[in-house]
Image (cartoon, one colour):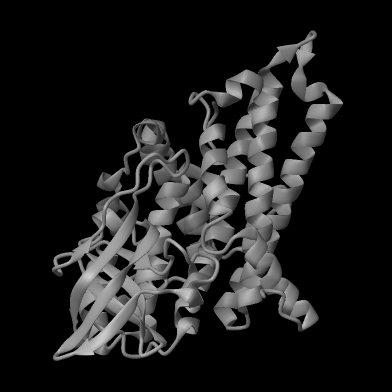
Length: 389
């Protein structure tokens, strides 16, 4: 296959500034050289390419939106989006790692932590010297996190945490977990360190999706968490949901990378695969699929760009992010399936990345809020009526 040059039918690059293009191209080259040649092996074996963590840290990809005083790159949200886009062209698992580290671990520490917590943890997380995870979802409470049963009880010098979390990216390799628990009925955030007695993070096996990613349970069995590990500015579930907004933003951008990968492969294949004396790209039914793909990619790119601008100027609301996450994940999965159809039987082999992206997108469409939950978030905003219950 030819070198990946990007997919930009409407010259969206003309709307980016020079620094944003440079950052995007740097990550694009990294993915092409360091990720794509090896990622199928990791997906097949169910292993995460942890050796890439220090490389990504050196590139400034971890916590890239936070201030330089914490060893972060202090980039804008459009640049952060482009980073996630290019990483997911490689694999959703790699983008998930960066998204969790940045949006679900560093963000709550930066937003709700004390100065001491920020000074201690953010530089180490940015340098990849420490890995983090985010514990909100529970075995019986996914779409309804308010029902969580994990509890914190005040004790001398700190808190005792009891409960379990499920479907936690990075859990088994994490040095620190941002765990959400109810303290006197109010959801608070706690920094649980891996060596705390009673805290374990067994890895979940048997996945057909996100196989190049670490997914874990978090088990908290009478875990003592010292007072200084409470995130002092947390004061309810809304704080956890603010973190999810960060992650959903990165997903909305990320899945465009998978769209691009599937479209690019499908287009190249259709132009070279000859049936009935001409390339299949010359048949109307194939062209219809390719036109659908390029249309949805273009719409998603423009949607993300405007969302990024709104995020940078402070006007983006949670329902704007939900709309982008909902739309882009659905269309990315449709594009992956169409690309598989164009490649026929070849589309199911790991010579091509399409089935891997398709399998990953089944999870990406579900996590950080299912398609249905984002539908209801946008629906409540446009009607003024909640349909959650």
